[in-house]
Length: 225
Image 1: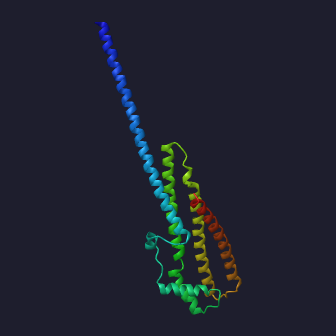
Image 2: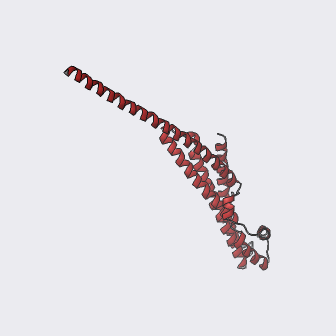
Image 3: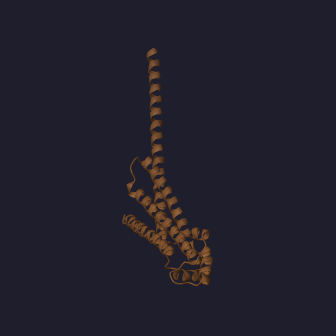
């Protein structure tokens, strides 16, 4: 009787062990399936985010803007833009006092448009790169492997170069404003004061050209993948 009772206990214990092991294995299978689903979902999300980055990068490269940015940063009227561009192109010539005052007025309405639009696009680009980086980091934790194919560092470097260009564009706007004000004060286009400002502009243009070249190289590296 005791032997039978012990046998029953052993059998029952064995059943419990088998049940626990089965539940544990099933839990592992379910967990692995969920991880695989999450990895697959993240991969799709990353591909979509990369496509968005590519679109923004192309738009930013040509100093364009998407519909969101266009709704935020608005240009002056077409007539004002035409007058402003014409007067600005003649800034190195002897504009009359009346023309300079008109240029100053138009500058307040039109002068910073392209720089502001570039700034907003770059800010959005940098934000989307941060999101992209976060998604890739999550994928690496789940898959336990490095996701070098997404070239996060290259995207970040491109964002940095676009930020440099945006900053230089803003500086050039400030330079233009200073030149206009200096000319309005009575200085000529060939005065030492204006020439000094133009030297600053030349240095900024150089930095802008370098950043633009680096950005072009980075975009080529990304599209070559």
